[in-house]
Image (cartoon, rainbow, N blue to C red):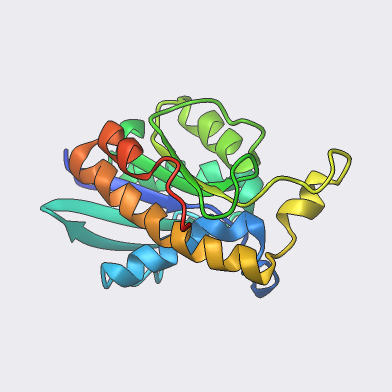
Length: 198
């Protein structure tokens, strides 16, 4: 087992591995994590725990940045393996992921909660045995019609206008995660919930 460290945090971005998924709605967690890694000058290039991860520090705290490589529905396996190895409790696991109930450009920070129909989050809750992990939801827009297939929608790509709005929230998602690490969920929620480029 890894060394116990009371100040280790895990920030996981959710998505599907493979070039065909890179720009899809479901991969916003990966994209936000990549931007965060860039801003911290951290390479996400270690292949272990069924994921790709990098390690850095931020304000004296150890940060692990993880992109599960299991495909979305099994994301929890990768999150559990890394967090168990480094003794990181759910309260210090921050998950960045796409949310169809928010418009592109919008974010919502939450301390805990149910999966809300998101298979990646469902998998993490199942594997950790807890809903009490902070999350940053990245708006990707609602289905165009209620009968539109959900799987087809989250695997679709953004329009040029949506991409513009999204650029703002992808960058802010990482900032929100760092705010949680530094100052807690309430502070991150008051700063980033409802933020929008316009």
